[in-house]
Image (cartoon, rainbow, N blue to C red; front, side, top):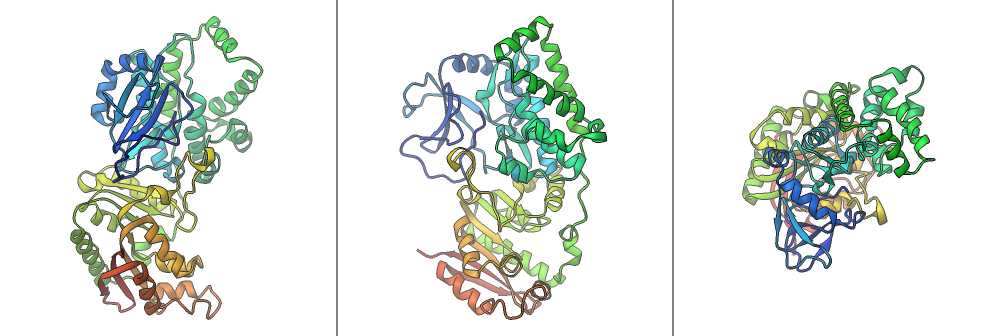
Length: 479
């Protein structure tokens, strides 16, 4: 059962509110009350928790941050019918696998397997293997589905293997072996990629690539056979054949080695070398960094800053000095993956930056059951400040999004804004306009943008960069 945590800075809930993604296991459900993330348990889930809470591996993983902090509490507001209540540490920002990069998904998969291996060593397993069972503290994954742990039954396979393959391993194989980005697949299929689907893509000689024959073709054949046999009969057959816990452990060790060796060589990208190919002068860059730093310092310590069009993360790093969490959104997968690789090796403010790959003109929608199981990006972003630097012209000219709509997006994603307007005379704007019919954007000019911005925000800071073709603004919401 994969769940999501609350967005940053939530208002305290006066009444209990169920987590939309936590409804499939009646013995184990997450809800919110009084600003807390709570989990109600009943029946066998209570016994599993009591055993888990006294285990050595769980304490060690919690201390290391590999699993989300959890404690048993008294909850007067608990929904009727629960026998025991847990309280979870809040995750700073909720993200989903279709917003992660290749390296992020690979590290999340390894985290999941490491947690499982530690559990197996002490007689526990996990009921699920979904990528949605993990979230991030900055660039570090953490396992959140505490209700997935249960005591191991000898002779039974890992129940989460299929989910792990469909939401983690197969997407990684798709990108590593075929160069096909996995994000659109996971976004359109919440349960991940089916074995029969990826088998058709990894046939012929590709079946001999790492992990393909065993975890794709053989898995698909076993699944086809098991579709004609009840789960109970299959378990009995496996016990009779001598299936053991040691085989489960061996499978997990094999998956760990496989995940570690999977790699992706991204194609060449214009944005990958943006620092040297962009039209910024050093004077513009230094002035822009100083403006962003001052604007965020003026706002004081913040819970969440969202950096739209983050590219190499230069301004996300500035924001991390002033915020508990920074979400760096970039549409280029290769650039975002490179940023993640850099961040995960750093300490200090960089540990508060979460890079996500997403097209702002087509952001993550609501999905899953009744379109509520996975919240839309806009519903998760309640930022104290939204940075929109060198992004407005790409949306307005490059993607033909009217300026009022761009402004409304900024207002929708957060409160305060730090935004850059690029004049039509700027070389980068000229490159974008060269591919558009003449006269297509008569309303795209500085005066018009300032007027639109002032309708939703009070402009409290304004600075023209030395180039004379770019202006920065800080805006705060109008009442």
